[in-house]
Length: 129
Image (tube, rainbow, N blue to C red; front, top):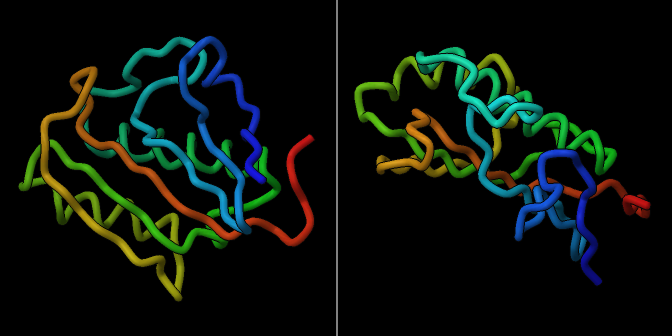
C-alpha cells in the first residue's frame, strides 16, 4: 500500500511531495524554494541548502518522522566547487549514524544551486490520514 504525504507544497502539482510505502517515506526532490511563494529564498548555497533541508523536515514531520529517520540522501549540486560548503551545512542537520549519500553535479531547474531527495524509515504503524 502506498499513501501520499499531504503537504501544501504539492497542491495542484502532478506529483506528491512524498509517498509512504513499504515501511519507508520517499521524499521528492526539494530545493531552496519558499513553499508558500515558490520563489528561491537566497542567491547563495547556504541559504538554499538550509531552506531545502527545512522543506524536507516539514514533509517528514507531516509523516510523523524526522531527519533522524533518514537512511538515504541524494544530493544534486549545480557546482562542484560547492561540495565542501555544502558538507558543512549538511553536517548541522544530520548526526551519526549519517544516512548513506550520493552527490551528483548537474544543471538544476529554477536556477537553484541544490536539490535533495531522501528516503526515511516510516514510524511503525503511523500512516498519514
